Length: 249
Length: 121
Image (tube, each protein chain N blue to C red):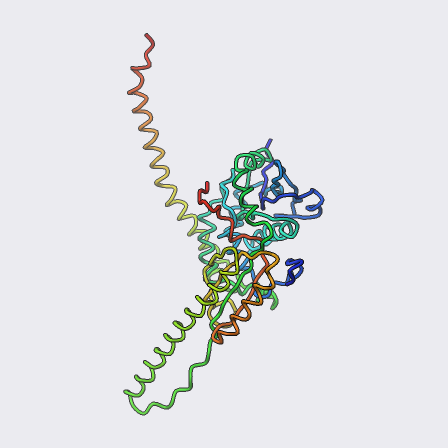
């Protein structure tokens, strides 16, 4: 008999009471599987894996599963340090999850040590769209071409300037953070966000320095009038789960 | 955000479904697990999402299921995506099957070669 388990995260020092009332994928009750001081946060996995796979290929369903996964990780992260797992990590039964905790105890313990007392903060920088300067009525083809090349030059300059500003902000924030990670910029086309996303980064920040970090980011952004700053989070440290010495299975 | 409880402000100013998806699909610890949910499918989806991301919260606020209205992710788009995934899986599957057949053949040949040695004296 198998009872597949969906694993959300691994944490430490979690009591069963900490998970009371928490539900995950498909409303399944969240519970823990412990090994020494490590705790895997799990729930019953959707019984039909083919169906789950098919669901994840549909964006609306994927969104539901992703939000459920994230909600559990976020709830547990408020209680203890966690290593968030990637979406849809499923084991045949509880015994196999225990085995995982046993076999990779050192790795998980080291990761949790590193992530304890930290949060992930998302920082997005946008270059605001500015209306192009009104073109003077061109009197000749030559004048028109000159205007065109000027516009292109201005645009190139704008991007070079923005890129340099992004580097300045990123390196200052990186110096305050324990670690940083870059995500791909999000598409402006449908984001509804004004401007072009030129930095989509995450920083691992000590909990005690969070205000200092956000204050610094705001100050830096003020110094760069071309950029608009947006925070996300705090998040569980999704972007900092790579073991420091590589080696992933 | 306060230092004493960083989680007190659950309000994520600029975050949206895209922020969640890029974390749960692209980040987070990768453990093989027992049951393989082919990441190929999911990665393909992420690529599509990247092209479309981010307007979900806004759309929901306005009462729109944006994926229903987006031409590349309308039900027709979804079907196309599923077909595309299937095709990719098949393309991946073919060499795998060939490899299996080749392995079986090799095993057979090896078996034949080994047999004489195994003849009990």
